[in-house]
Length: 94
Image 1: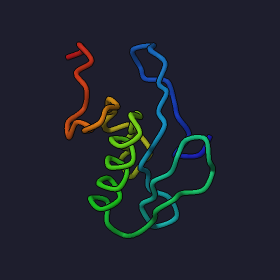
Image 2 (image 1 turned 180 degrees about the vertical axis):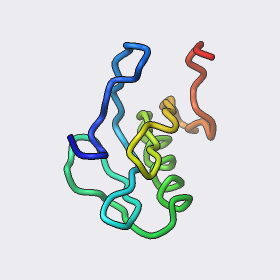
Image 3 (image 1 turned 90 degrees about the vertical axis):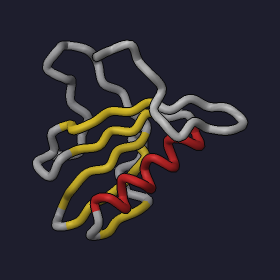
Image 4 (image 1 turned 135 degrees about the horizontal axis):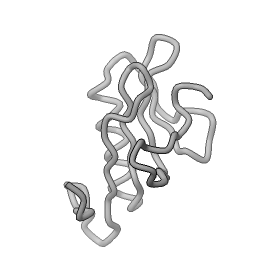
């Protein structure tokens, strides 16, 4: 499994995300999970996360953010609507 393939979290719940930001081959990348190719790449983690958040917000998708070692650092889900939220949708989990 490569460092950017989705893996099940340790609590046993299934992880499904539509956008992910990950580190590979010396650069940060953001891609749709249904594509092996990133739609954005570069040296700045913050910039690539921001791009992933924007795509997830506008499309009502989930966004996985991975650390440099490939572990999941954060998972955010965004709701659709005429004015997409700027914050993740509360999931009820703490």
